[in-house]
Length: 172
Image (tube, rainbow, N blue to C red):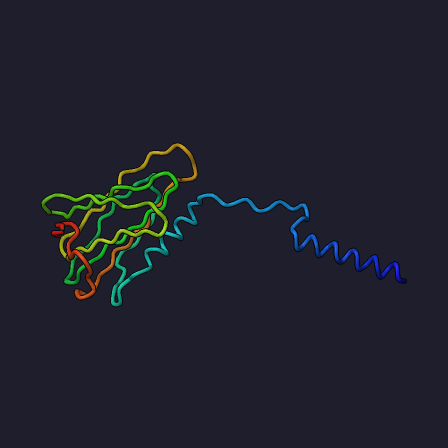
């Protein structure tokens, strides 16, 4: 009886040592690389931060950098707008966003960082529609190596912070 009890104790201690030290022969999980679904989730979470009280999302979208972006943003009405855009890529550190207003006097380009957690926020007054364009990023491999997520919000006029018209530009 004593031998069986001692044997059970030895086996229990050995099993505990395997659990504590991790020496069970099982391989440690490999770190996960850049994944499009994770990148889209990070970009969407970034967009949700710093949304002013009273702001309302009027348009929203996501896409792959491989396809680029060409969207018409309806900015009519009386309230100002804010265009938020986030990019997440393992290959590109930044992309160029080109904004132009229909019937306007030209366009303006903005550097958008493709670093997880960074959002470019651009205030725009109400007016005729805007075109938002990012050139497609050619790539040969699959899956896509970069994503962009964006939203257009209406704001209360007193919620506008910083430059009130990113398209026209502001001094300073």
